[in-house]
Length: 251
Image (tube, rainbow, N blue to C red):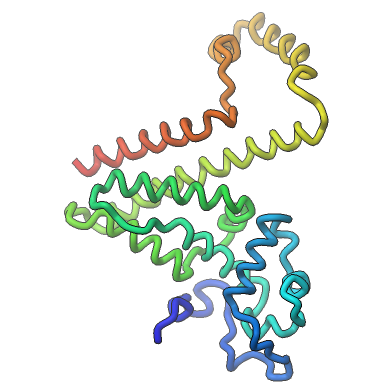
């Protein structure tokens, strides 16, 4: 029976992996464990405490198992991280395509943003690792199939897909920055009223300099570019701009 584990790339293409037959046989295998359970526990830990909290000893404690028994299912922390990230890729996939390329790409983009925001630690690690796991490949397969029937060459289709994904990932990185700033301010115990006098004086200096007329206008019109209330609107606006550009190429 074919398993998704059969579709990981070979060693050397990405982080090395051990087969069960390669694992040291002196370790005791805990047959009550599964790889999926280990990965889910690691993802839950990263979500609640950050990726730094993820290590074999801590996961084993959460599962009530011996740390060494985990190595029957996961070769090392590198492989665990690959498996964790591939879980997030799986969450980015939508259930079914509609046949309308714009609607489908919008749904894929919105779902991917939701998945990445739900696991804030993931984007940081994605920047330094190849995404070649089976769920990542299934997401690429689904995304490329959106172009079926549009007579588009593979290279152009891939460029469009990468452009949309770059927009989504960049938007999420910016949103996570905004969220961290909000949390830092909240934890400092300093409210907006405390910032107000200094902010007003600063805007006054910008205005008097005559060098920042457009920036000052943003403040004068009461626009907060990092407002949490406008994040969805800002994401949708940018996504529309990207999809408008794709439409031009498709025409």
